[in-house]
Length: 163
Ligand SMILES: [Fe+2]
Image (cartoon, rainbow, N blue to C red; front, side, top):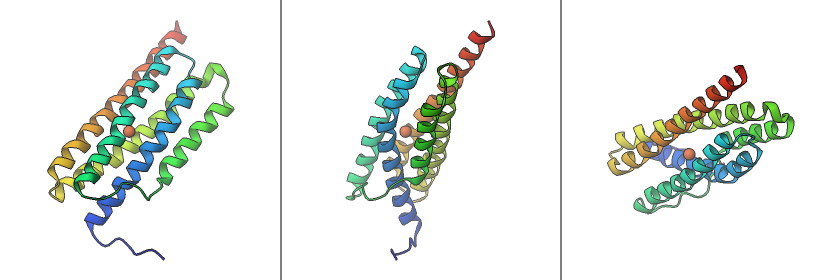
């Protein structure tokens, strides 16, 4: 059995590796979600978030390069499950309901990331990694804005249907 994590420092490093894996999985998943999206505003939101996600991957690489470590070596099983749920929606949903399903799947992803980055930022602060804490806050803010944007798109779609 692998050695158990003993310190907050260890938990912090593991969480960052997990987030790195999560973001990399998302870089692969978002183009599929953009392709499945029916409306141009949702397509655009997914493509924009893909660009952001690529920068978020680089930010984690930057944090590790300053710790002289590698972000590789872990698979985020939480994101793996969420991406699978998204795949299910794409396969099992008719066109008319597709965007609502995709938004729901994407918001689960954002909430997962918000929880993880919130913790990572707090642990970075506690451990005195001020620069990393600032970098993580930047990504956390992006994830929050991405989530709010999805809510707005869902609302505008609902309004269009009501009309
Ligand atoms: Fe992200």
